[in-house]
Length: 385
Image 1 (cartoon, one colour):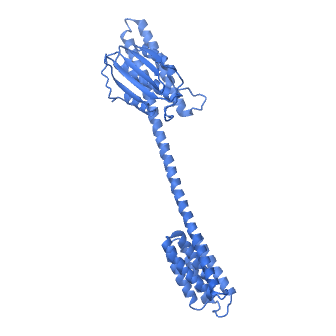
Image 2: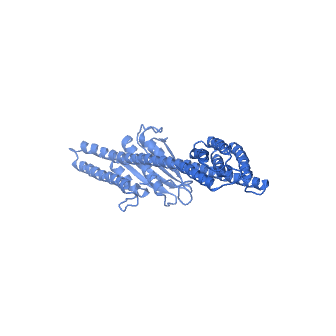
Image 3: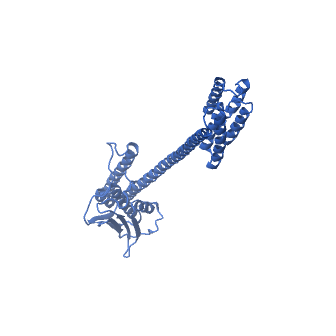
């Protein structure tokens, strides 16, 4: 559209200049001159679609304009516009050839126009006009190229942002599924054990049955509270005033008491200089302990377990060991073991699980920390519920 308007403007300008200028020795501008002016400038409407071919058409039309003897100055501007377009869209080699042709044509026009005092002045003017057209065209081409690169980079950036958003959604789903597994598996294991015991002693020991039912009610309530907390975070976000902090090291004693009610006596101890840890690290420790104790309830009962928390100079170590009979494997085929290892890897730590030499099973989690208690090398942002 813009090139079409430019062609119309150039036709009008050439026709107006042809009728306005009357130089002795040249054919007066007439209807044939108007037709030739249209032919000279009309290709400009397609200059950006085929710059080189349009330049050739402009050159041929300009030569045809000179044959009847019209003054060449009225049509020479079209060649400069053609050179500008070639310089903006084609290689330096093609542009140099077109510039040489344009220089020759402009020099001829300047000499024949009889408006400049000497041939050297005409050559200087031609060189200046050709150089200006080439320079502006080349700059426009480089600008268009940079704009194209910026558009490509912007498109890639948008794509990367979309990919990151999709990955974030996937990671959030995996995190939520892991949390649901830990919460549901632990509480349902305790409930299942207590329900079995209540059914077993229902007739012979009503008091023990009522105690088991109390544990079931309390455990189910705690599980619902954790599920409600997760849903609150998913719906409202951490900034909502209804947000409930994720469980951490402070909840280990309560966790031990709940597992103890299921028939597994748990002892919790800590060594070293206790210090504040990031919420994600505390949640990681809590979930690993919870999953390990859940496995004891499910696979090794009756048994007792010991949870040892050790604060080192640059790491925190958690060991959960039990003395029960177990057919558990250290290969980690189950979802629980896989989830524990994934949590450890998320914070740059390691998790080792296997049978103890004297019997029982042990899970050891090691998380590296900096001197100030933060996660070493990177502050992980996951697992914050």
